[in-house]
Length: 306
Image 1 (cartoon, one colour):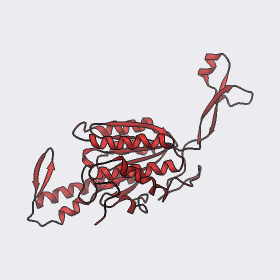
Image 2 (spheres, rainbow, N blue to C red):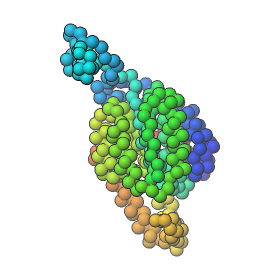
Image 3 (tube, rainbow, N blue to C red):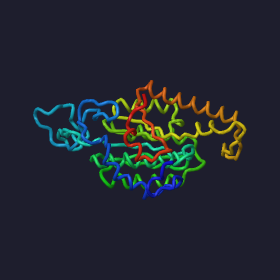
């Protein structure tokens, strides 16, 4: 039996339990020591994609400047030709997309999946900050949606942790299409050449969502983290004659052996569809177990599912 993480009770979410991950973030940090050019694959994040340059300033046009960089708006406003200057991009903005919907408020062992999702977001958030990256994110559920533009150091991590705690408390019945809005906003906010980390149970992501993520992956380094729970296996291990009380579609019902088998088959089909969908689109997928403390999974969090 695993012990609960520090300051955690497994059901509620507090800022104190998320601050703890600042320490573990210094170990197995995939953001550290990466070159800004070339490619990496597998357990590590790849190097930055895109042109690797970002806008710096505008100055008067000089002989020999590339005419393609002329800023026509400034030129028209001032009456003199001006050109844009770029500098080499030294930061990769990291965008977290965290799903805290009702579907993840389930846990049969140590933590609710939603709590583990928040713990994982805190860990990778601290890792990115420790490596000097700018951090932002989108956190959403049926009743709430928060956006944070990438910012450096404490200005990046602090508001994101606050939103994780507040939205976890707000989660409940509401807009079932919240992921549609969230993924569309991610497409709008994500910068080419950055890092996108999607944290969910995966089962709410449709083929259309995966298509958008794959499109973002053409110009960004994208990774999906699936938070899982061993509930399906636990239900099937129960005696056949036992019926189990479950909360389903807003009411309390009892699930007998046949219903448990049908439920498990449905879950397995959704799981297979999600994994195959990621593979077809070339999306890297990693898995995190809500039945184990995150600190005991540091060696495997970034390992992709093959």
